[in-house]
Length: 197
Length: 342
Image (cartoon, rainbow over all chains, first blue to last red; front, side, top):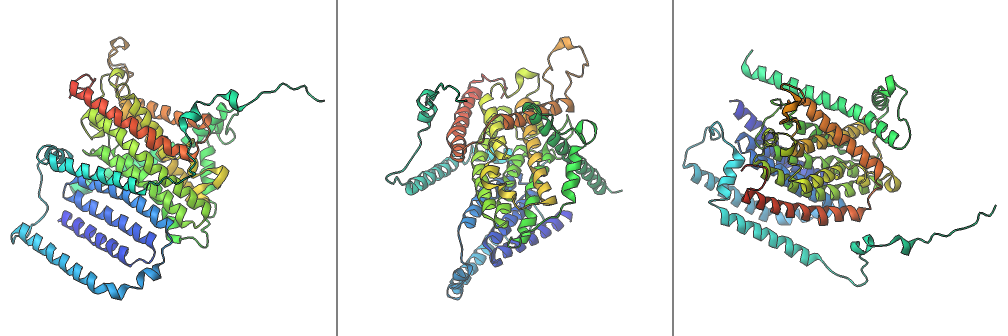
């Protein structure tokens, strides 16, 4: 009962935050609403006793990805009016995609639950440790999928760096090893001078 | 009284007690800092309010409380007010999983280490939003510097903690301390010394303290992200900064110096029942005080880093060092040469 109350409360907050992302006029406000939405979904995962997923959601998305989002949005000078101008033109396509996604979601839920409506989250045994349970599956059963995913991510990193790294002529770069190896004798000359008074 | 109400009352009391203790410690940490830096620079430091100047922090707090909070007219009002809170809340919430003595921790959760990492990474929002909402170029520059710096050092910090995790075999902070029991020779600082250095220096960078305090950078951008904050709003930023210092000191002592356990655990000649051999809050407090002192020592000793060198240190030195040492540690664990027993 109490759990259901919490679930509905945080789901409501999640929906409100998600609507805030769409309807706020200021891009920075939109990002803060998205951060709030991530926190609410982390709480929903905590209710399902999936604490590893919940904390990783906060750590990766809120702590790293959204910070970079915020960073970029603050630097860009976004013209909201211009971005809104094509709204009526793109709306039908957006509605079609939304409809398709809703139908897919309903199909998946019906297929998974086979007509039964779950009364609550699955109850785990007393000493259940979500992190250990996930690790045990990830590194044994799904080890190839896990490794392939990490190689794909590495590839993406390398590709992003090589695509954006350009050497332009006349670039001034400091060689740290040379800076460290500098001898004070080459830079400073100490002169003995008689006082002039 | 029903059980859940009892639990609610107990947990709320614990949270209030820990929070108030942290805030009081912050007050005396500012006094400690001014005294330490004063003596290091051949001055006396504050000595007028109360006995030996011990009332100085309270005088400062009262001064800040009765000042007016000025909100700049072209600023983003809501975010301007929320930003200090966003930097304070994670700094205080992390204390929930920190074991203060053997058996006392507010929330004994399995993924404690991940929780610590997640909350320390959230703290950057306060600084970023403060810099943006102020609508001033100085504040914005400070926020940009701070965000890039924190993102860079967070990675090194996370990797250093992977080493701790491998050595202890647990994400629970209590179990991490328990796996280092048995006196000084069992502490992780010995096999994981490079990771300890990386973690502590990254901690200094994460809290934006000297020599990594370019986010404030008085000499070029006045006061950085909090240039327009005054009165209570400024006090909250100040509180968050010092709460973070104490937090980093506590975390370093838990991860690498076995938190509340005693360094002399196996020393029989100290006598049976000698409190120096017993694990207690005393030992955690000693370790925390030492690391806070190191923070101030560093501040009084080193000049401020140049910004590109901060970035170089984070990305090109710390991250490779941690990766190499994690590999070394992996081999050690695999060959069973470490002090740990996995």
